[in-house]
View (tube, helix red, strand yellow):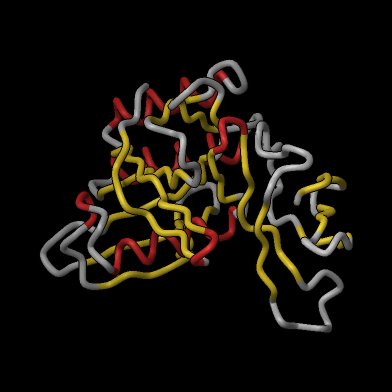
Amino acid sequence: MLLRRYKRFLADVRLSDGTEMTIHCPNTGSMRHCVVPESPCWFSDSGNPKRKYRHTWEVATVPGGHLAGVNTGRANLLVEMALNAGRIAELTGYSMLRREVPYGQERSRIDFLLTEDGRPPCYVEVKSVTLMEQSGQGLFPDAVSERGRKHLRELMDIVRGGDRAVLLYCVQHTGIDWVEPADAIDPAYGQALREAAAAGVEIVAYRADIRPEEARIELTRPVPVRY
């Protein structure tokens, strides 16, 4: 049971036997609507006794009884698993995948660089989506994000150079049915997203199936992006 999140990186939980424990919160965002006191939550155990907080918060119960994957560090892993399984239709047909490749004028690192002989390289930037304000509505970002805007600028430069650029929203929320920019939170990001789409950056979103009882989270289906 989740008790509270504090100091950005910490959360207190209550175990089934009534004892309380502090665990690591691997999410630097606002986690808007993802912190519900006295709600069921799930965490992983690193098995490393040398870690100050060996357990990591993974899944939260959010308003409406939906589940959200709050470990943003897992987004790239989920996307990589889906790429390898051929579940992202827009990104099939590449034989080589490289991670965290330096690129761009603003010294960025692309999450995935996909290559195949005879095809332009494909640069894939991944963003994790967990904010739902209205039923079915997924929003990004959940706080003002200069970094998000920088990545959009870099992707536009990639397209201008003749290569392929894809922004992929990894939706870790079982109640989200579509994704759109959070204009009320960061209007500059929304404007940048629309400019990127107009410039030829491909924007797609895939939603995760979250089953904490089976310790399983995987991207399973596409959802629309509205902008």
